Length: 203
Image (cartoon, rainbow, N blue to C red; front, side, top):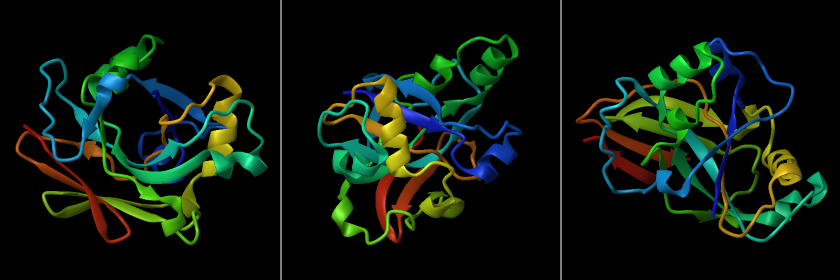
């Protein structure tokens, strides 16, 4: 199982970080040791002082695929859930300034909390799914798939050019605006529409 992630997929998030709008998906990966199941606490590591939350919808791949045509891409994922792409912003910035890879800023242990998954069949329109993140009960991030630069099918097709997709692989599909730092003692709750699927305590 591998975790593939799409960066800079929501225009307003690109603006808030002063990043350049991409012409094609920005890809990074996380190791399986980054996974953290909903309900388990996230222990703030001592190697970062500026970890940010980034709520995302996550696709689960249901069969092997390579060089998938966009028009067939919908056949390769069957469930959707929530994930948080925890990002050590200080480590990321340090690496960026030196022109170095920022794998540790995205892939450290516990940096990918995930929820339970819902069948795609539950959703009438995959281009109109609302999702959100609350921190201590306060709404911090709110997104809709209609605002993605690259939709689900395009992402799956694009990724399959470079990576053979396998059953159980996870695709983090990008975060909307509102990312911000987390602190010890906070509780994070993730929602798809009005259904809470993800809960993480920061310790």
